[in-house]
Length: 170
Image (cartoon, rainbow, N blue to C red; front, side, top):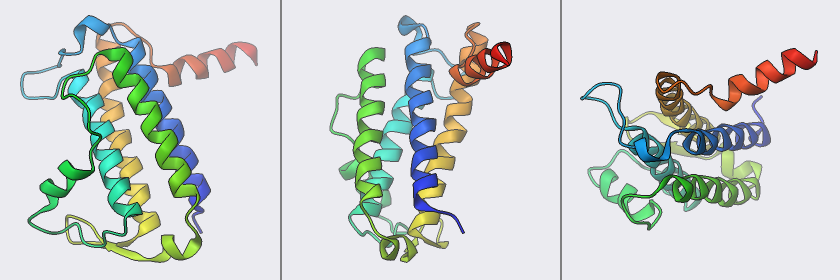
């Protein structure tokens, strides 16, 4: 059995590491991308902010079918109402604010909420808890891309720094 608290807390931890990655990346280089066909570092961070906020907002509002032709329109209505381009400090701050708000709202929901079903945009029927897990996994995928960009810039991601610090103190 997967508990909602574990999913919410692990998403929050992942998000805080995403915000830290934005702070660690050279602020003047948010337009960096590893190859021409990939998103820039800044676009990845903004996508994480927009997608996580929008998908969790739809979940909280009881939207139960994301497999509609209006899906992109819905995303637009639920994403944070912010300027398209944000500087690094603002982007990191908004990533933190969004997860604080959403994690509190999600934690307040009871078991009945999480056992209800939703149709994902790919047509798969999942529980709301499974959808929340999907949102977190989506973020982790893009955060991993951001971590590769950090490494390409010679920056060690916060997750690795923590592990290294723990090994030294052990």
